[in-house]
Image (cartoon, rainbow, N blue to C red; front, side):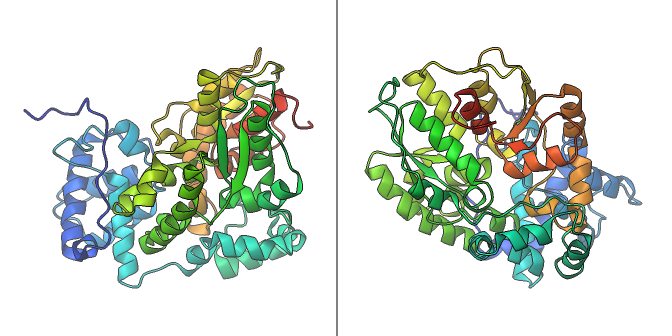
Length: 444
């Protein structure tokens, strides 16, 4: 007998993006209506993002109040509001596989975007923003000028960016650095702590990620410092971007290209005994799960997925299996931990909070809700205000907690939260930066 929901762990089906049926307009439309009809009768996801209120309002305001009589062209606003955060699939929907209804709302939105792209409907601006490696390589050589031009206080330049690139003038944009994480790692050799319990037992290759490499090298240096201090030998590897920005736009061919390139290099390090440690949640999700759904026949992708850790997950793993050296100092000002959606979607538990609770006498508050940023979704003018709307419950919680630090495994989420709160937190941080501070490895 089919129940309302399933007690089994959710599973995901392969994304058949190369199958002509994937972008077939008639078959896609039929699947959209099937899923929308089920969602309309359930409504558990009404408070996750704006996709669901838009869907329910569309149906409720129609003359027949059913899916059958909706116009297909009215589906696009529902699709546009999805940030691919995966929270409906992971935490709310009772009908995900292996349930017979077989609902995967985020991947259905992905399919709709792929069909749009196949018909030639592509957003040029977002396509250019997704070229993370090209943009990072170019910007690093003129980073002072880029950072000056992109600062919110530079109203003339932001007005120009709004007109030419549709970037919302209110959006906080990441800064670029002339010295990347890869360069900094090479310039400052470091060795593991011989007195730590894990010394000689663990080796980790830090997958730099495009954001940490070009925009937040301090996060990478903090991760390297913490791992070396707890006895882990480290190297840094960055074969290229994981392709998450292209996934947001359903450019699945580019994602597959990134998966093949990066996995081929990282499996070489696995052969040398290294664990692969991702420094941002979105990249960890790509390496662990999304690549395998897009490239199911690539043996490198499959092998890599079995050896990837999130950085917080890895520190907790070392603590449990090997132990940590003493010396963590209290941070009485406390930490607000935002559990990033793409960290939650990894099914590893709240590792950021678990790691930070190892610090003695340090208040740790947790916010377990989407920040609303969603990558380019939170930057471009058509969706920035919506990103702020979705994030308001998070902002309110952070303002109430008033901790000295606001952290998230998603660097853009942390930046988004700090930009919209009035708290003692000085800057957005990654949880691993707090561990580095508690061990006295970084300056305040």
